[in-house]
Length: 175
Image (cartoon, rainbow, N blue to C red):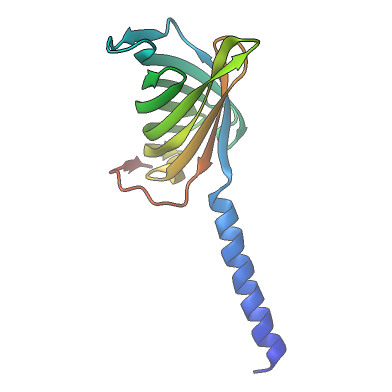
């Protein structure tokens, strides 16, 4: 074999490996979300600002695989002042010809202040698609990373990206 052929094979292989790595980090979907109903805030009582917060939300997919999909979710987090830790969360994604169920596995957040007043919070973490079917079936069992940013009173954006770490949480799939 000549050197050009070997070099071409090596560079082609590296390109394929690099491309697959980039694909794993791509955005699965971006959502515009609104808080639904009142936010439940339960003071823990051991110190000021220490509380459990439960939020229910509804989202519309605006980009990626989730464009046009509806996502209904719920999260529960512990806040100590302006810092939060997410304990539970997830929801149901409804897309044309597909359905998926998400589970939050970890997350942290921090309050955002604007002009000295709370303007929402930013959060990020990881999750898994516990179930997916139809047009979303390829997501079943896939780990994801997520990130939120405030977008106005009672509103936020949610971006869900593929995570290259495999999930160890059980899943199910139906065609």
